[in-house]
Length: 512
Length: 92
Image 1 (cartoon, each protein chain N blue to C red):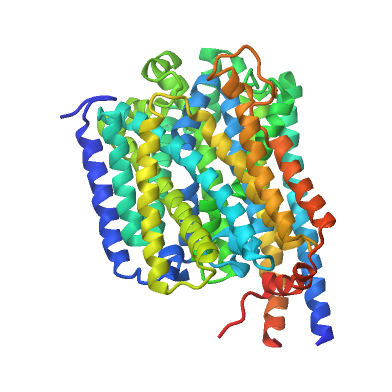
Image 2 (cartoon, rainbow over the protein chains, first blue to last red):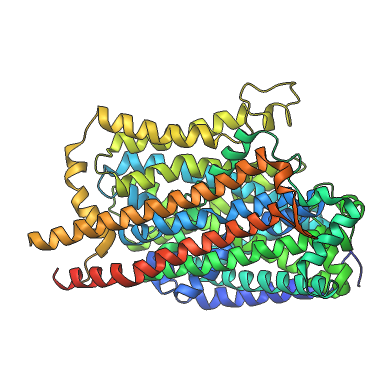
């Protein structure tokens, strides 16, 4: 029962069962504490700064960043690092503009903040539209990634893998709510960082613990060009556009924003971003070593032979430096990584459906606690089924662009409205609504018209919109529309209530 | 009461100025890096010592800059900002 990549691997199966049984045990413990919506959505606001920092890291570092970036670096060298860096630089923005106001103004979703001084219904409908678009595209990318990876790593069929991920994730969220999700993300973050650190150490031991010797060995074997920018960034506008979407999209991802409600106060929210940025930055620095390590110790031909996109670079590297059992451990870590991200996404989607749409739009904020909790669980089941369905529907499709799309929508639909609602006195209901709807719609339309879909998927010769990522157009557009509509149709009440926002952003809700 | 409101206003303004300045710094550093990648490929490929290109070094420094900017913000927020907020809360 031991074998290489794609064959049943005893260590991988043992590690995976250990992870699933531990996390289901945690879920059982969490389920007995999840008795109200405050527990279900926000873990009873009892999470500490360090715990939330780890959970944020666990929620954010998807399999795409572990396997995808290591693979990209191993195949294209320096160019892969551009992504490593892009995924980190959004965190300072989260710290400076988002985390503390969010914690002080809202309860469960980012729409709480935007709707705080505006008319509830229109704002919440528009916000739910943006949130659910982001969640769906991110979920598709994760589920299709899960199906492919698990097939490659464990030799299970694609559909089985998707169904297992969906079912286990559903168990976490449905029974254990945010408390279980938080701990799954913490366990995953610790495993992922331990795995990456061990792997990097095993690599560096062969290079006298010097990353520079490793990079020099890569340059010797594949030419010094692997240490310089190559073809990935050919159009500067495209590069800037992707950069903006990665940076500002991080500050608009609903599953990340929701995590700030799990801590007791704004100061803890601040502490948790510091920890998260520390962990995530350190992890992305390690991907430099993992990528170049795989390039030298596994070799580009062997990496391409296992998977064209390079996704198997890190597992193959684990096998090369640590043998089959270490490969098993890394494979189980990759599985855990997907589970934790998918659980966070589902919970934030369920909050948009139940807290924003059902409770505040359909029921006009008059729903009993029991009803709210019941609706949240029904929404979770619906999203769980949806994610399995989407995973199977998109089998065999190239969905790599969907993570970029999710970031572009988050940056255009959620980020501008969120920032304006907290910092700009004159924002109105119509302004916020228009900004979120135009942000979502323009991102969707421009992605459809981009070379990614038109040339890459539909096979046309050219695309009507020249850029692969629409961020550089849609983010300024969402801000402009929000400002223009607000100035054209002023809303006296929204402006008067800004004093309340200002006081609460800094002082927090009144106690007692 | 009015004095209290003035303190809150001043604090909000200070917070906004610092946040905006640090956000701008991060944008400039990161987009500057991206533009170098797009326009100055040979320069970034220059080897400083064997194995270390200028591009790799600058990339790592972007991550270090993110940490540094966060450290600056946290230092200010944990000190002056939190003290003022605590004083304002007491008088609420």
